[in-house]
Length: 527
Image (cartoon, rainbow, N blue to C red; front, side, top):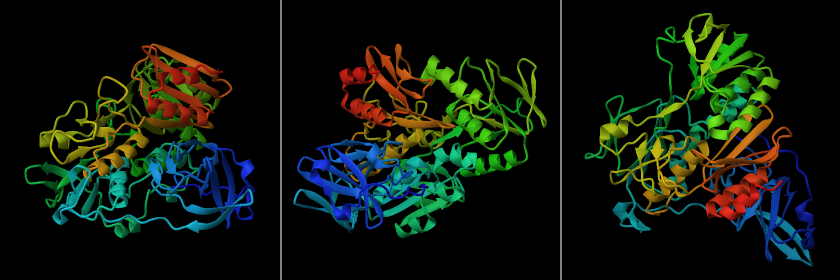
């Protein structure tokens, strides 16, 4: 799923660089033995790791150092400067480390250091405990999306040696879902980038991946997950990572089932195939997914119309000014909006609006929201409230059963009410946290939500969570695509959106983690 790294730039570290060129807390990008390397200084210590993020190959030198970690500027992955470990998603693969020598006021990167391998964790049968919980002998993960895949990988990375089953309803390998509405749909990303891992990866790591399979029931007393073919898999620990399903239009509106929805790789392939035979598309819904689909279809040369009931796109999430800005970006690329309208009827040739206007369309795509897949939890008798209810450790109401990702409603560590967040990075980080907690770590999930949305050459990064706000503070310029937007509730900045300010987004994330409301207010007020 990673893009090819850029050509090597900067100094050749094997020839050395002056220590004076590297201030405390500073970073230099260069190379060694034909590979990109990042050198960072912490006090008197100099550390070196590979120079590009293992997610989308972003240059880490453009990120931010936080203690012994570096954060990726694009999508906020976090790596250890000391070990290269991928500490926080969306990066799942560790970075290489390099040995550094200091001589005569110079720093030399001398050789690549092999990463440490995980030490197997004994199962409960072996009597080993980690933290304050027993290690399960077997784990079943239902759902092979962001949360499920990340959990399976983390279990093995942490050394879990028991039986591990990953059940995925989709018929493909776990995939890079954000790309399905962005570059892949636009035709600028090859399908080879989409799988998160190869089939060999799952075999090599002892992950029993069952694609194209569904769990029909969870037998909690019997500790078994019943599959759609009548077979079952036993478990001592269970993770429900069942995600969400797109909200679909009623059959009275779409009797011919012409509408495409986008959730899976198969969905994206189907839209691409239909786009090849169409000249005009109607996108129903001005959500992030809907607008990303609109941008991708414009990149393919289709005429695009967007229909939505709201007055401006994304106003509920980003506010009036940013909503107007996003609309302007799309209109500048030729998108026609039909706002404050709904769809009355869809037939084989056109979409008819509530006003009676008829828009001929060869392709229709709807992005009108999703609903959590909580049916298995309801059947199993778990606590459910617009999502599966979990505690701070992502445990459900049943012992040994966890939930993560779009389906989980969890305590907001920075708010008063539980929240359910539909972001890829949150899902991956929750999957990782649930895996560690299955192994007895007892680590509360406190990560700050983050997502990014791509609209042509404009990327919006968003950290925090604001279901409501009293004030929107904009510093910089939306028109110049260089701004910070703070969302304030009761005097506190609870979320920050940025355009063209990657380091500000990273800083805001760190300040939200620390609860430094004073610094957040200053950050979102600076011009």
